[in-house]
Length: 504
Ligand code: HEM
Image: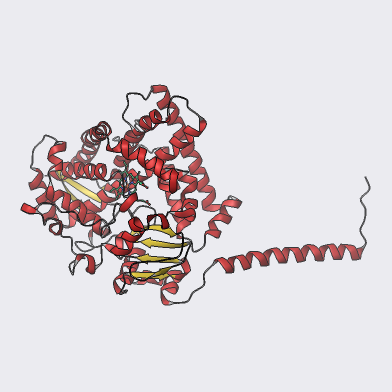
């Protein structure tokens, strides 16, 4: 067919129209960005945007702690993030208990983690959360699941963790203890959650596809939250470029591996198994649907995220602290008693000093350093701070552990004795609103008891058998000095935790 040649004037007009439309589209994007992007030049926002805080502080959390100590209310506002940050226990109680319904996780948070967590317990509010919470609390609270979980922890310690450490001690090699604890915690939580063993902590230290994909996906999902505007990552996701492309690939792999595990569990049968997947499968009934598979995938992925990096983070900072405070390690050893035989569950439960050491470590180095909620309708916090509707409010356990008004003038000292104020020096817990390391109120962590038992089992076994000596730059900082943390959903030490272990 012959093409019709447009006259020169008409071609110019078409070109001008096309150019005009393009300019208008670009202008709309700029206007949208300007409208959604809060501009501010106050000293806090300037320091945040230019990262000038990094000149004086090791971590963003250290800078926030400094700002919050200076604030008379223990609350500050970072305008460019549209976020109120608080370290005030009365505010924390108000958000997590008194006005729980007005401070949900909210849609913006669900969007950040939605691709990874789907509708898992971590990422939903309202009826969907209530349903999973009830079911998960029931299972984790049951004697059968608890004793199954403890058996797995004890087995992992004896058959994997201790041989790896003994090997390093005998060869005199330097070991990245953070990597060892991540492998340990991943194997343990996979066995507890799926009843399947990825065997990451075998002597050869094999790489696990699932563990790697998990690392990538949680790191990149956390990066979304650190951006000053969500428009940036949403645009990248739409165009499937850069970090969003990488995230999509990692999540696809997690989906495939989770689906394979669910299929395998179904084939193996789940009626008499005590892993969480089997218990949740039993509760979804016999008539299995694709919707059930998605539900199972989401809840179990939430459990992996909840139970892996948190435990390994706390264990890593614990051994960093113990190697700088050998008297504390010696007191733990004295409390647990020496000997070849593994300590029993009952014995672990009674260890008051060790309990205090774990809590003191998480006071200074909480695995989840901050947690955000969204204020549904405009509200006033107990300290008088006004919060707009749809605005973000963050409480900050890392900063709260460093507030003299909560812990006294020695807040920067590692002192387990501050927890041993009960009769005969027994451990006494602090209000969870002052110490929201496991969150508090209606959404308090449901794996808390399991996590504490797991950490006790590991720390007691290691301390009884080995001395751990830090090597590298973290060995240089003071007795309770903070290492540099990698920004992420859960705190991990930048550069790992290189150590030498010696048999005691
Ligand atoms: C030292 C270890 C741990 C710490 C510090 C910790 C801390 C937390 C925190 C801060 C939250 C609230 C997170 C949020 O809502 O954004 C949470 C929730 C949760 N944790 Fe843990 N956790 C630990 C270990 C575990 C373990 C081992 C499990 C499972 C076996 C677990 C299961 C959960 C679940 C299911 C939730 C969601 C609760 C809800 O939203 O209702 N946690 N945890």
